[in-house]
Length: 347
Image 1 (cartoon, one colour):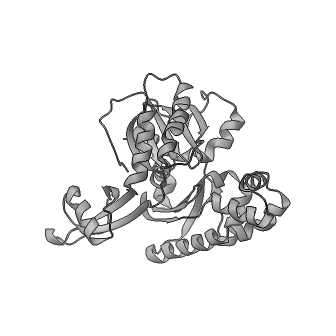
Image 2 (cartoon, rainbow, N blue to C red; image 1 turned 90 degrees about the vertical axis):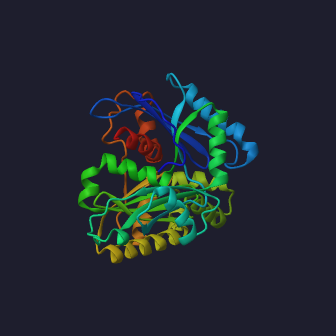
Image 3 (cartoon, rainbow, N blue to C red; image 1 turned 30 degrees about the vertical axis):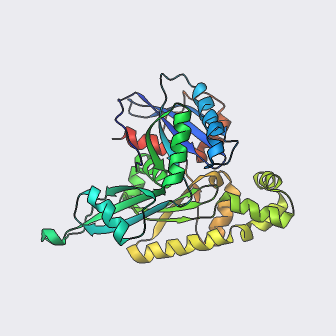
């Protein structure tokens, strides 16, 4: 999904940048061989609040520092964002040019006046009427509010980075899964969970198509807030306790993740009823996916088994600079940046 695209020359490498709530993650993928190579990765803290005008400069400095550690000739990147207010949905409209479909969506489905819209027509295997006027087009719709998208764009420009695209995290992780796990996505109904700081995207795929996405505004920050309140400590201390998975934290986890588990169970039941298919695999990426204990508790509360998705398992990481343990720890949060690059590499 693109909110901005420019014509870019073909390179044997590509950069993916994923803006989180408190850090920016970057990867370099070398292309041209049968197996993509992860050449480098880095994570830099964002020391200012995302979305505020006075935070553009410090955020741009973090991006510039990230590029400064890489030996690449220029600063082109596929940027990934996850702003509050993101919408991912399916829509059905009479066949028309996509330019007209944008206006029709604004009138028919909801008020998208202050949103950037991107539409992709999905392949449909179900037979449709022969009458041309009755043929419907099935659209995957991505929408993000104008203001936060412009903030990310301004950060990139201030860092002297040329954005080849600005995409939604909920969709780049799906693109990455489709590229790296094509056989699984074709043969099974798969749920990919993308855990962010303030939201969780629940992406349901079948026959290599994204059929349903539900975004719940509940993420790792809300879990930490619950723990801080119950433990009577400040958020930074609660975050440290969560990472250490202390005994008090383990006791509080079921209540802390209860809202997410309930919504997850409802979403699975809804998908299985609507599509008459059983979800056979549940994979997870994002910050929460780095904690086996939290995934275990969410799975127990929702009545499912959740696996951390190793988005690097089909890549060549032998040339990656840095500590292998550091790379393993970072893998869950690199999925969005990797997906943005891998999808373009597969084109």
